[in-house]
Image (cartoon, rainbow, N blue to C red; front, side, top):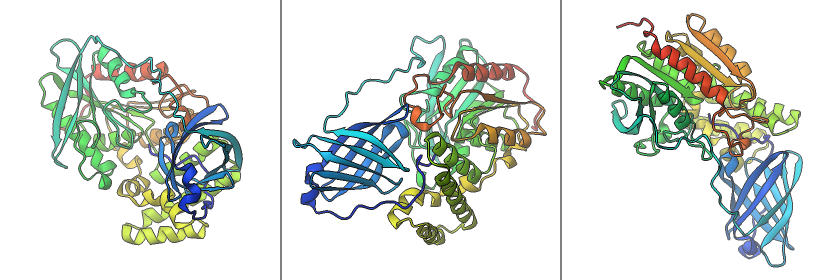
Length: 462
């Protein structure tokens, strides 16, 4: 699920234009680590000769954040355009280090930057499966007739001839590979391995533009388009002799937990559905809760959080009400200008709200699809998920599925949006945690799926 940067919305600070000669000693790359409470956040500054800069925060998945840089009397200043934050530090005599403070959301944290890149060591990911495997893995590809795009993936098959039950894994938002790789974690590989060892075949697929899948017009694609990719995968499986067409189910994570009901509502032959941190509320409500919870996990002041949530609500309402993007952009710019946000900061922070994906997501209510799902459903969420609130979305999913006779709602204590055992649940922790999927999550999903894949499929229309 896409998330807003964990910063409160305020007027962005813009550094004055500087001459190239002034900023020249700063030009190039700078590396450091910000200690924010128990969390370590590696930062990289990329400074250009014209005074523009970019900031990377890899652990937060935030890359290329626009900024400006200046230098006067040995004092350096780097100011992010959005989210509003800045660094002020003293340049060393040899020009190889900066010692100063990171300023954001009213907090001031010490930060030292140097020209020396940190040593790169592979992250420890002990759960990543390693060969030899007691099952077969087959590279597969097929074409989505709705888009004409070729999609590529892997199908893992238990020993024997079958036909086998199959789970189709559906990734979260953003361009992700078949393993849903994030910070060297491969949660879908872990899950596929666990399921296949228990007799359930698994199809995991590269998203459009990832791995072996064709990209197409990705900028205009929405969750509804991605649902057709899943439909194509199901159709592909139904054409195989080693697959039981009556026992094909869906397991979706985050946005995948939104897409799965869209597909299952349209296709009554889907045998089972697992929603991993799926949404039960309209997208606009999810974004407001997400903004609030991420900011709270980051220690932002309550008053600023309230201001941020109100602004996101206003922006969401405007985006939903105006279908014409050409008319929406100037109206959005005007609204943000009223909040004291300069045009460049407004575009950096909220420009994506006008994209087809965001416009569709904000206005989409999953309840309408969930009500039509007749297949058995497992809805599972981590109680420390700050991107899709378990406390708000699980009850909404349960209510929407009130007419379904086989529904399991399972909140898992201590787990975040990625189903890792977490301290706060903040996205900044994802990379630090060595665990890819908590055993409680894997065991629950596998046990439920195996039980439902073994049953005769629910009655469906021919």
